[in-house]
Every structure is written in structure tokens, then in C-alpha cells.
Image (tube, rainbow, N blue to C red):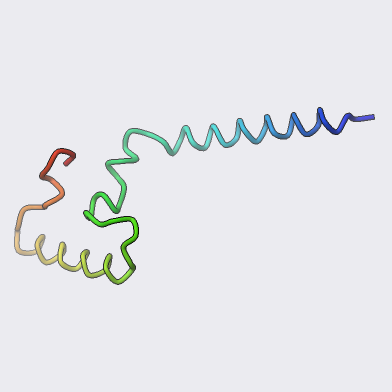
Length: 76
């Protein structure tokens, strides 16, 4: 007969390994650099409307050839 405690421990160990593997793929040094909120300079609490407005403003700046503000500061 299978011991339920052993079976649960094996399942938890398997899940922990799976979660660790997924996190290892996601949590790379590029995570911060590619964060869309950081790139746009918006708080994570920004509404969809605020994000859309900000993107439109950035598109106009790009069309006018203006400097990209995200390329300035301590973490460009």
C-alpha cells in the first residue's frame, strides 16, 4: 500500500522543482530591463487609459525625432 505522506512529499518535491525551473527561466537579468512599466516610466498601478495615453505621447516623440527619456537616468 502507498503511504499518503510519502506520496504527498513526492508531489510537493516535484512541484517545487517545476516552479524552480519556471522561475529560473523568467528571473533573468533582463527582467528589469524589459519591464514594460519601467520602460514607459509608469507606476504598476497605471490604468489602461494612462498607459495608452503615455504610449501615444511616446510615439509622437519618436516621430518628431526627440530623445527617448527612458535612455536617460541611472538605469537606462
